[in-house]
Length: 359
Image 1 (tube, one colour):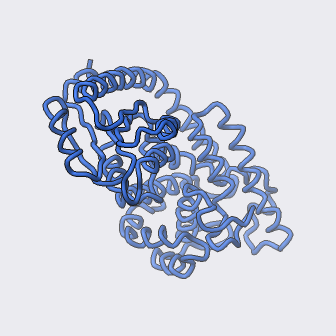
Image 2 (image 1 turned 180 degrees about the vertical axis):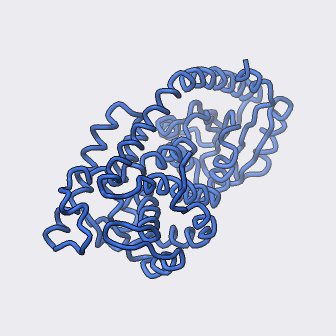
C-alpha cells in the first residue's frame, strides 16, 4: 500500500516553451490539478528534468526553440535513459514529418497549435494515469528482482576480489574504486551539464561495473602479474592484453544482465587504460571517443594505485596523487574530470582509506 500512498500527492508537470504566453496558457489550464514547472528553452528543460525526474509525471514540449530545440531534448532524454516520463509535443508546426520525427524520438503524443484546451487536458490526464499504472508495475517487478540483483552484485565483487588476492592485493582495492567512482559521479551529476551526467540507474550500474575493471588479469601469467620489478617490453605487451580479455569476460558474465549494466561493464573493462591524448590501449581512442564510464574508472583506479601499496610500488601520498593528476590533465585523463576530482579531493581523501569497507 505504501506505493499507492505516494500516488495521492499532486503530480508534477514540466512545460517547456520559449514563449511566455504559451506557458501561461498551459499553466492556467493545468495548475488546479498539477504542480507546474516551467522551462524557457531546451537546456533549461534538461536541467529541470535532471533535478525533478523522479517526481515528474509528464512533459509538455515545444519543438521550435532557440539553442537546444525540442528534438534535441528528446535525443538527450533517450541518450540518458530518461524515457519513463511521457512527453507530449505541443507545437505550431503541424508538418507530418515533424510529428513522425518526434514520435520516433520517444514522444507519446503530438498536439498542434492552436489547440483545444479540453483536448489537451484530456490527453494530459490520460497519459499521467497511464504513467501511474506503469510505475506501479515497475515497482512490483523491481521488488521481485532486487534480491537477485543484490546476489549478483556480491558475486561480481567477490570475483573481482579473487583477482586482487591473486595479484597479492588486500581485496580492498575493488571496494575503494567503487566508492571513489560513486563520489566522482555524485559530484559530476551535481553540475547538471549535458555531457557529464548519468541518470540514477546508470549511476548504480557504473559503480558496480567498475569492480570488473581488471577482471581480464585472470588470464595473465602469475610471473608477470605478481612481478615486483619493472616489466620488460614483452611482459608489458602481455599485461596489456588484460583489457581485451576483460572485455570478452564481461561480455560472457553479463549476458543475462540488464542491457545498460552489460554496456558499462564492457566499456570499463576495455576502456579504462585508454588515454585522453590517444596514447593508451588497446585501441588508442582519445578524448570523448573513450566512454565516460571508463574515463571515470581510470581516475579512481589510478588514484587508488598511487596511494596504496602494490606488488610493484609503495603507496604515495594523497598530495602526490593530486600532482600527478594535474600533470596528466589533458594527457592521460579527461581535463574536466581532473578539475572535478581536484575540486572534491578532500572528500576523496576522507574515504580513500586502506581499511575502508564498502557497504
